[in-house]
Amino acid sequence: MSSPPPAEALLRQLSRISKEQRWPVEWTPRFVGNALSEQQRIRIVDIASAILRSRAPFAQSIGSRLELSEVKVSRREEDHKVHLRFTFEVDTTPDMLNAFGSMHGSCTTFLIDASSSIALTALSAVAHKLGLLVSQSLTTSFHSPAPPGARLRIIAETVAFSSRTASAEVQIWDVTNGRLIATGMHNQMQMSKL
Image (cartoon, rainbow, N blue to C red):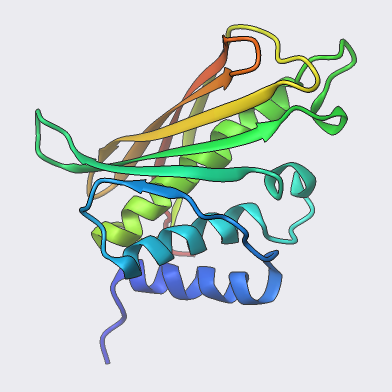
């Protein structure tokens, strides 16, 4: 008996997490572009839910509050490959702040990690590409502080996807004050066999 395609195995693993651990999803993201079937759209929301709404203790309160507002599907003009762009929103709350009253750097990095991981995992699943992805490198550049109460918009866009590695870029915007908070580049690779 042959093993299932990597994307199917990934979705089965995520669906187990979803059923056992995730919180109910109230998202109704807007999908831009018509390259995805209804089944693929459902998978994308399931993946985002499994990653953000799990009952895993690390950053649970922050991840569970992220709102998936838009998923854009497009073919890049230069290479004609499908790419995904995810937009999330969240308000800056006290559990996200450092001692100086602005968003903590580790919270910023978590938002970059989580949002880019969702974009890359979703692209992997809908394109039937790599299996489980793990971080290879994560670079964060800090531009401005995010004050308490600011509405943040996190934009994660896939950049590259090959047979061994995948990359996504992330921008975090303070839309309340019109400032770019941080940018990040996340490179992932296929998980090696244990």
